[in-house]
Image: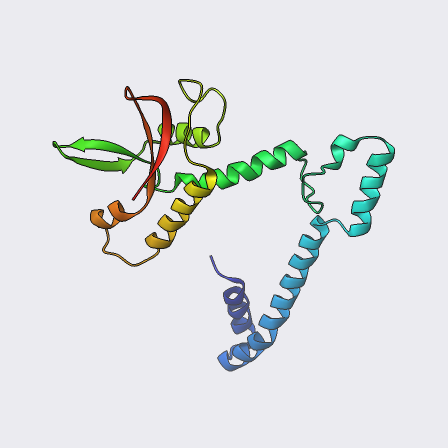
Length: 200
């Protein structure tokens, strides 16, 4: 599969039979094509947007028809997707929660010998359960209630982990991974309600 530049150069060399002329013509044709493609892409992307006049006309029409629920008050006014306010808020929460699934952020403790507890990355179904607990989705906790950390503390631990993880370290260094902050779910016989704890 040839690129556009290669296809044109091969076509020109078969007609002109002079590499110098081909290079000269290509130096003229490349910027012309780039400008054409960029302008075409700009027009296409702008055609997807709605102008301010169209936006206000649409809102005024919906208001006259008394279809206030379709005016999407909680959605950014330039958004043309078929979202209502509740769907937009749920989407924002979902996108924020995806960050919690970063590798080794939600872990579980495994007894390793008598005194040392090893921490491993939690399995996916348990991570989903824990993220639902973080958001206090009804019915997720077995006891019906739970207490734990607020989003600010958990987000701070995640941001610390991301910033520490950005530093160069020896590949596969378990010691380094154990120094990174993470969260665990603490539940069991000694705890009536499950709770989330930040470690390290």
